[in-house]
Length: 106
Image (cartoon, rainbow, N blue to C red; front, side, top):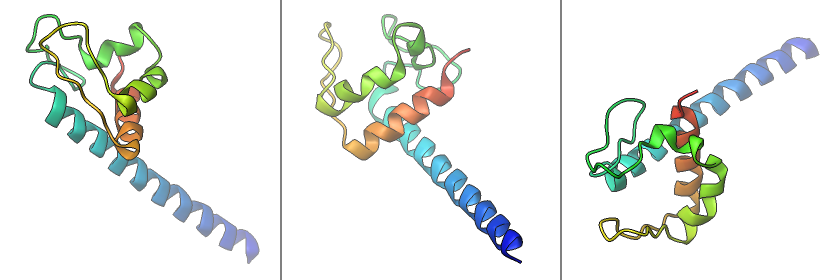
C-alpha cells in the first residue's frame, strides 16, 4: 500500500512540476514578446526586425544563457542607441532564462 501511495505522490509531484514549468516558460515568452519583439526574433523561428538584433534562439552560441541572469535583473544596457534599458523582476528573470534555454538551436 505504501508503494502505491508513493507512486501516486510521485506522479502528482511530476504533474504539478511540469505544469509549473509550462507556466514559467509561457511567462518568459510573454515578457520577451512584450519587451523585445519589436527588434528581436524572440521565438524558435523567424528573423529579427532590426538587422543588428540577434535572434534569441541563437544567444547560447555567444554565451551561456545563465550568464544573462544578472544583467536581466540589474538592467540590460546595449552599446547602441536603438536599444532601451530593461530591468526585470526576479520572477521574470527566472522565467526569461528558462524560456531562452527552451528555444536555443542545438
